[in-house]
Image (cartoon, rainbow, N blue to C red; front, side):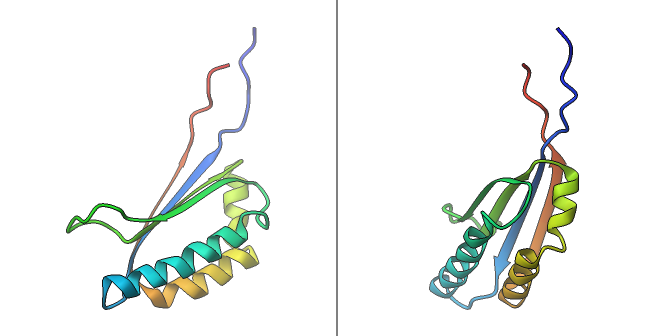
Length: 112
């Protein structure tokens, strides 16, 4: 049996701290952002999965919102950066957040 030369999937994770003045305002902001991401699900070429959600544990260092996207390749993630859906989300999220973190990594291929 030969080894598969499959291109590894690329995982893109973004966390945001929102700038709403109350928990209710931040929850409303998060709902708008999550809805925007959900609309991109079928619009972005190479997007294999998307999960977006709000924090459920009250901790001092917790972030308000996270998005986890899996792309079929690094090339697909790179193309997403200039995709109109992504640019629209950036325009929406930018004014609503006080901080942002990001990590991107290649997912290990599952053993056959």
